[in-house]
Length: 162
Image: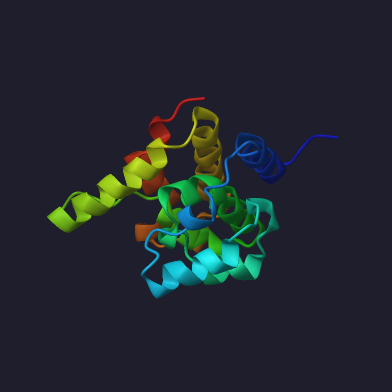
């Protein structure tokens, strides 16, 4: 039986992140002094990315993850977005869209994002690209211009080659 496109993307994400390394309890969150980061760290502490509930992922933005936390927990966000396009898909794509370079603040945010993206393996980057291509082709009606998978692909992920 042929596999559907969404099932292929899910399988690619799971395979690419199968060996992702847990960041350690003290390296989950971006800023332990920030209350949102601290809440995220408490909720995710000791949990594998495959164990996180859709509610936890909805409540805790990936932007509060440390780079190590991002590298480990990103597949949970990708898979949750594939399961619930209308709610999680736009925020997940937004988190994967590099900021432009229109101001020093935007450049700083972009540099931070690119550092996180560059820490992924080639297989992981390709899985993210496949996710974004799926979002562009199959879920585009959920996006405003600023949250567009097309923009994420143009600014970074489209340059990742299989």
